[in-house]
Length: 224
Image (cartoon, rainbow, N blue to C red; front, side, top):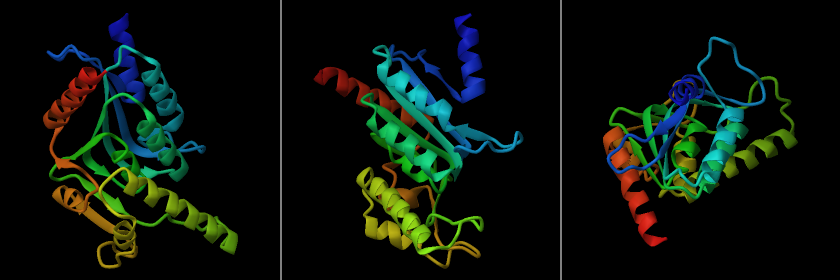
């Protein structure tokens, strides 16, 4: 029954336990897949990460004394800004050792989530798209609206720069680049470029990410 419950959680929420390692560490897996869903439900055919699933799961991880660490895997196009930033803040505030791994991509509001862990990896072909907060045509273009979007932009750049090695000034430059994205502003960073810019710590895959997580867990246990 316990094994069935684990498989159901993996299928439904993209979360599960990695506890078959020779270190006897209990690792919680969190997947940020597809579009990050906020208050509005997306279509049934969309691959989504629902913040109402992720936030309680993260709270349970923090409360579970048996959990040794967290692995966050990302392949996301971005999505709801408030929901994505809430997930990033929640991950950052967890006291457990945590490592992130960017796979196909971690775009837009996926960037703060990718940098919210203690250490981050990106596969060689992984991408990160950095652009300003967009405004849809349904939003009234008043001065108050522009002020809100500016404030949101500052929240994102402040979070990213405080959890990585990139400065807010450089992040703003990448966001306002006009030559990389067709009909839009922003930048695409591929693999090592994300490391060179200071967003991500290292290029690597699942093996290196797990080894780094074991290393952080070992150091944490030895300092308690």
